[in-house]
Length: 260
Image (cartoon, one colour):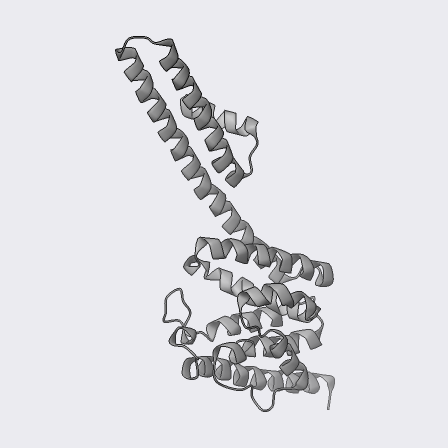
């Protein structure tokens, strides 16, 4: 056979295997889910769960800078990676030992166990987990804020380890963008809360000033007001500036903007 014929046959074989594994992932998660919530994606509760492993598999197949063996074993492992965790089914009988080992390496009892142990399971498991977590963050609007903070921190470390081992892959670029978008949105929301708190504090202070103007001037009362202003500034600095990771000069500039 010619090289062209060999290449065509290899593509046909891969396509057949890919279609077979995608069908297995889609149907198994729908029909053998351990819990009803594992049959669909949480963000709309109608999208088949199998869309998640399929996205992961399609993405790694298009990683032009990864060796072929990692891409081919990787896409199969990603299509099957939640079968043992989230369904009552077993892996297909024709799953190769290499793919089976990858799936087992990606299987954990909980996200807490995963974050602790994944680093000891080999560089390929860390790589595959980045595809898994990036796909989940695409639907991150269903995550509670505290969980999302931990999730993004975990992804940041995955990104670092994958970059170190494999370089600037497509998944690194996508994951970086997802993390950065979340972090930017979080800081914007924190900034809105911070500005609202500053404005409320100044409304309260101005109300007291108005009350002072209407009453008999008393030095002690003025001192009390001055102390309250200082306490308010200290409280805002501690709560809100720590949240935004800004320094005292930036805080003072923000205060000036509000006052103006």
